[in-house]
Image: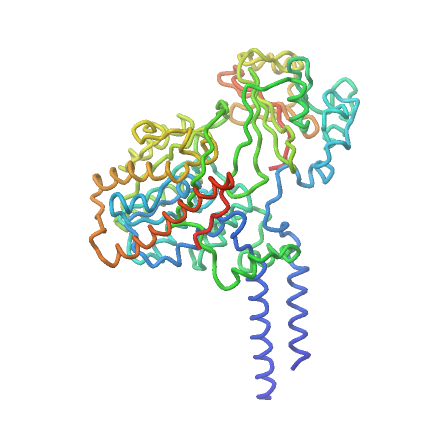
Length: 355
Length: 212
């Protein structure tokens, strides 16, 4: 009898191990395509303090240099952003951040571009945001809020069921990053040193309904409540990206919301000249995102506002913190130099991963 | 012992291969327009056309057969199409073919997408209209055409921006759906949408139903 129990136990353990190993092998590593898929996960491996958390879609992870905040103002920051991160994603990532943060952030910045969406949009973007979250009741609720009708719960618990077809094109990345995850960002900021000037900008068209949805407002309200409960300043921003178009009717609603909740709202589209943005040199994809040089300007401009208005501490005098951040800054500058060298040699960037 | 282990390994393999039939392909998302609605043939611009329908001759690269279902009335085309500078533009036409007919556009951009390659829509503008196309492989196929100003008009009824909604009804009938100012007429897998403000048309869009 005892031997039988031992045999069954060993078999169960073997099954779990094989299943886990297969799952690890087959889920995307986001090392050579869709690198943004690893951004949410990277937060958990950070051992640094963060006074400032930026939350939102690509308009945060591409547009604000975390090292820019550090080197100019001594502000410690992390960006919790992912592609097409919708408002409910962002709310639950805020919950998740407060759950796992080494210290409570002093300021949370939310980029409001995603307010235009009232419903989940596209399964692959859901996966980029949700798969990287650590399991907790928060992740469970995030999936419930985000899941499209044809997405199965099981595939979130066991991503192998979502990515099972990947066995057909397993590549070296799947083995190289079997035991460790690639690092694609510097505290959530993705470095792009290349330039693609803004050429032609499509003319905006009228849309049927400019009113943000109840669902978007619901989660924005919850974000405001959660930050208030934790005595954290919430700042709303619209990054200065030229495309997709940000309608005045949308802007008015955010101004109204910020006024009602006594929040600072900055639409950086109104300040591109003061910031010093030149769309011929500061975007890597024709105005959709800023490159690293544009992102440094953004951090310079925004960091000053944050420090003056909210008295964020300059932590460059704290030796342990400074040591960590300066080491990170070295990686950052090394990556920029490497990318610039590749652009000069090959006309394009080949290196995107920090580690 | 070995038998039990083998049994579990087999179960694992079966789970991996067979379970969760609703899961999508590999890591790369399905491209809009390449879904089952448009069928596999959609990637082949040389197949599946209906030469009898305006704007869908074999040569224009329309490959999805969107107009193959007759609506039963020979007087009414099975899909909406639009004529601009004497060139018939139908939904799902190859945008490069249309450009070759219309000439150099005033603007042409392949809009970058976040994270995923292959989701990059292309926007082409001529005076008065914007054409948006979705990608399949290297090619882009038209999924909507919108009007900017009153210099252009719809193929039937000659509706322009600034027209009254009554003129729209006179031209297209009353069979439409409505939501927050938008009147939508359907033919096959295509729509013609009139956005209104105070019963005046402020936006006109021809659209392919991509099922998104």
